[in-house]
Image (cartoon, rainbow, N blue to C red):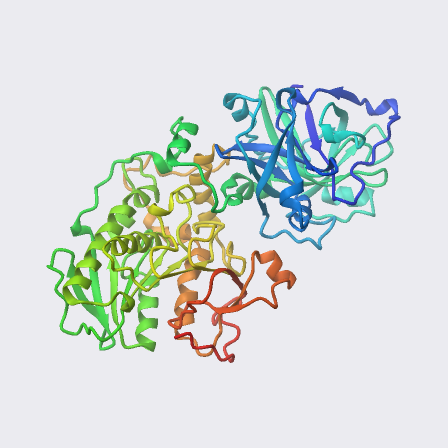
Length: 632
């Protein structure tokens, strides 16, 4: 089928007609029957109890313990809100002619998916994770169907072919129906031809050139629009609205959603994860940057410096080295609480995040504050001039140094664990976690750790022993703001606060951050991204001159929320316990328990996940006049 375009569709919503296809097709449609084995990446989403076909999907990856499926967001929305979905809805494949059912483990809608948008829903895509691996096909052949995304505008493609199942007896996923001589119409042209559909870019339509009926195709919701080029199958889009006799199929442009589709780890959260050994065996080609041993200067005690501050000395501070026999300045007070604030990747103790939080703490409380400076490891690039990954690989040793230093200080000066609080941003959150483990091992588990947007890339498959975890202190609080870029996108704390959905913050432009994260993640996931970076060929790298651009506004917003929550009066950052941003925005959680995010008045009773909405600019807190409960 070289040089032919193919469209795979499976069905629409639970109660909507799946595919308006007549059994007696006109000859002009040129329908033929094809074997499922010719398209092994096609799957069906089935209601197992009734054997009812719901939607289509496309295999886009295999993650050892999971299989990853791309489908329409409307399909996932229906599944998520079906009470018995975990038991009754399954993914069914017919690889190599052998029908196999897979249990759905996780679902992930596009963060901007709007269930009220109906036909004009340009974010109508989502991901499913099933209990894998895929059966009936070799890993080598499966990698052939990793479906790189076609970067060119879809309206440049004139003729396509749809592939779908007939609505009758399609739950067995046997023979497919194929229609050729179809064409893509961009949104404006589609709207001219059909007044029933009013769509906007990047949506487009697929119509049959040989039939007067605009929707005269075999197509099912959730399936992909594909382009075959020699031996490679390429992804063009995902069907969002099934065709009928009156209107054509509507397709979401995959190139517009490239970041979302390529970052398939978003669909995976915390439960069972493959081990690092399994991951390395799966991606043994060397494409996994996170596991490549890069050449860089190892961490020594000389790379870690502590700066001590009090209210009377909040500007200059006192410099303390790790090897200074843990002596403390005269201004240190055993009667006061002690804070350790740890910066993130690319940072230093002088950067905004550390200084902002330090000043906020000292403004409201007379306490001891240490800023942890690990600037050199935080800016390591390694011999391949690859950013971020060397710093990730140095985090464990930095965390151990910090943990041993705090342990010695606590032991020598008899500091009570309940008087010690650690705050870490980005990679600094994981350093705090590792330091917390050291203290716990020495029977000095501290009271609090606050992680502001803990780093995500390279941490999705790390065990809890190698990252921040809720067991690292008596109470661990996390603030999630940049999960679309540098933030970890699953809960790791005792209480986890997802601000404005947790993926992206209002009025933030994170384009450079998205590009760099996509580059790192896509290399790990073997997904084609069409993103290149000029790092490897430069002996002197200009990266740090624009580090803030690569960090992204949303990721850095976390420490700003933290600082404001400390100094703000009232209870401005009140969150609701809620499973998802979608449920929060829908109002389903309005009667759920409340919790005040962060500040020094920590809600130790909070458990699980909370969602909160802020103002779009400073001050971000909304309920500033609300009196906040005193938790301790």
